[in-house]
Picture 1 (cartoon, rainbow, N blue to C red):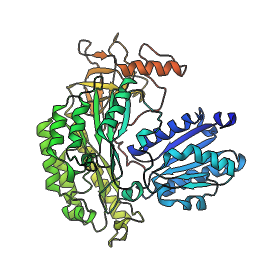
Picture 2 (cartoon, one colour; picture 1 turned 60 degrees about the horizontal axis):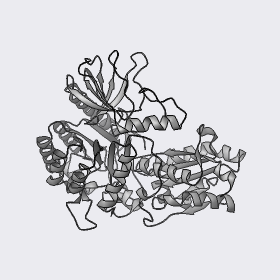
Picture 3 (tube, rainbow, N blue to C red; picture 1 turned 180 degrees about the vertical axis):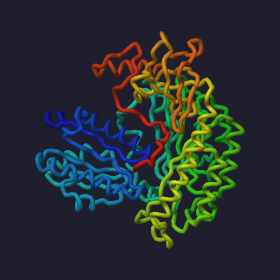
Picture 4 (cartoon, helix red, strand yellow; picture 1 turned 60 degrees about the vertical axis):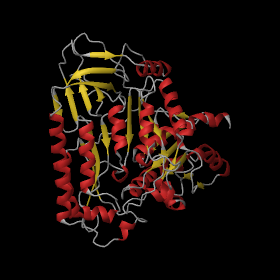
Length: 499
């Protein structure tokens, strides 16, 4: 590789889910391992990489809109390169180059490790390179990485999915489920902890079927318990389990392993048994509610979140009211709510009775009103509690109060004030505060008594100090930390998330 190549800068733009966020960390690690450096000004990057999602209907429009904005930049500077990867690249393949011939590289979900070589080949050959592997070449977590956070990390335990949900295109793009061996996962976690990480999130399209590939149906519960034996690992989360495969041994492992957090994100999708059948979701609302009951019996303070789809083909008003009923009974701490998107290549796209946009929109707004009300009520119930927060580098709530931010063990976002004269925590440190106020998707902790407020300095805070020093920042006696990209640890915004 030439010296000029080593000077080139990059920007990675990520669309979609936590899997994509984790993949983007691998892409940045690969680029830096190959000699590229992150662009200080993204508008002047030599390479822009799009890591795409294909789940929602507007994914195509979002990508091609972004590509269109870069066409002029490519005309002005032929050395400027554009790469498109992820699920949309896996799906559209050569179509991307036909629609946007100024794109240099298209790569799929199974071969993100090929990106540096493809960029070099495109530059050398002066023509677009399209490489879409049909099966996994390297497990993503075996590739180099550059994390956005010093204190939290994603760890893939499996890739792909064996389910056949009629609305979902993921199995055809990421393939059948492939599981990593437990020893390999635990070794990665231990290495992360040695690097200062105190929170990890185990990732899989269906984490609670982990182990089926190598013949151990109880492997996921065993993995959670093994995480509890790792010294220095403060918090363990996971996403996402499938209700049909959720077993009581996982609930027991969650309840009995101190560093496994009292949170559960479990997609419901619909409360109507008829629609669940049409979706090929192999559980019914009674089973789903039964799981929640058992989780809350074992873990009374568990915060449960979910995914919901409004307007699936053929959904009647009665079907929708069933979703509203189950949501009311479930008392979710937060919900990701989506309007159904017709995705070519999925069975649901061919179903009759596709609903008019205005019907879907009206139902969506009613559902959003309900989930926001419940989230607010659930958050109001937290007022007066003393909680432990992992301090985040998500910025301050506002400059007037000089609040900092952190996540509780239940993953709720809390904006907190420092008592006068209190030690200032660093991102990755743990603080104890008292909740004084609530909104639907965040809590406030103002005026925590000095005798209650406590800062527990951690290896993650030390790692943040080292990262600040390495980037010529000023490591502070605990500055609040505005440098570096923030990490979304799982709670949705009030508005409908974009994909």
